[in-house]
Length: 476
Ligand SMILES: Cc1cc2nc3c(=O)[nH]c(=O)nc-3n(C[C@H](O)[C@H](O)[C@H](O)COP(=O)(O)O)c2cc1C
Ligand code: SF4
Image (tube, rainbow, N blue to C red):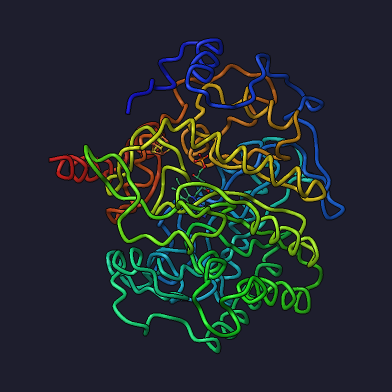
């Protein structure tokens, strides 16, 4: 598989020529406009509130909370960077577990009564940083992402999976060591978990967040339930049953809060799990079950948006107006979730030009937006566009293929990118994320996440040497 690095495509013309030669369909605006009336600078309205521009910071955790789920200085620094970015929508900050057994790692934040004050100050510091840089925060919207990590729970030890699942899955069970049905949540346990989400949402409202994200993506519990075709009982099988968890949580939050808004981060399509094949290039793992991919087609490596569209219709009916889209899972098919040139240490070489992965997510969102124009869609997976991110982002927004452009890895390396683009400041090429994947590899190896190659703060930390040594060992 050969394709050029984006950094080697020296200008927009070369980038577009590569797209055309490779039949990759991406919109591209040659000139990026600036100022508050520009396509990316214009505001949006939702839930009677204004969001000041079209950039959104995607949730990103750092595996750096305290053992009891409170933020540390590292967490605070990341959130302050989100505040100074200039983006006016902060989607969730990072994944915050609603209870201990649902933490993806022993350092994940936990939204409990005891932690409410510290998580409130995390939000407040973000808002304050934003105000210091941009004058006010009237058109800034900040939500909190609530989660249970389900199959990917590791609440007690970084390297010890303690999976809780909703149905058996040949490949994924093998990966997390599920050997019998004891890891499967009962219906009563799911009912209890619904209540735990509602309690956490009440705390999030108390902490000052404008909305909560009831996370349904990346193979975590909510997402796995959507694909629970083989699960018997109230939460599995039919579409109505597979979406009951979400509907019940939304209804419960409405009853228990004073108008807290609700959004959903959704893997809008999924593929089967991939593994390294010949030359470590990713291939679908043998034994996979395409039926158990939500938004996937019968081949296991293609999209079918009919059920996701039905879900979006249901969400609208129950009052959800904001959807932050993503795809697949970073655990079992990272090339569709966060396209990268360099895979994380435990991954596989991309089976396609990563730009194909970017285009796939953009296409899926455009299709969803076309079918549900009344909802606000945030897109993800743009980081791999690198120097051409603003050109594609503007073209997407102009053509109403999405309402807001989500930024993940790019803001770890280049936090003030949204402010630079909207103000028309010089493009800071040295800060552009080149998708080295260290921010994913580090936590997979038990090290706090951060942009070790480009962020001077992480470059100077001692963990960088540790990460280098681990990577060198893995490459042998
Ligand atoms: C270090 C890191 C942490 C992440 N943490 C979360 C998270 O807590 N919740 C979530 O929904 N997605 C998380 N993601 C996924 C990102 O939100 C985003 O979907 C992904 O990085 C693709 O967008 P990008 O191409 O702009 O990076 C994380 C990604 C990275 C790299
Ligand atoms: S470590 Fe830095 S350069 Fe590498 S993918 Fe993460 S943000 Fe990008």
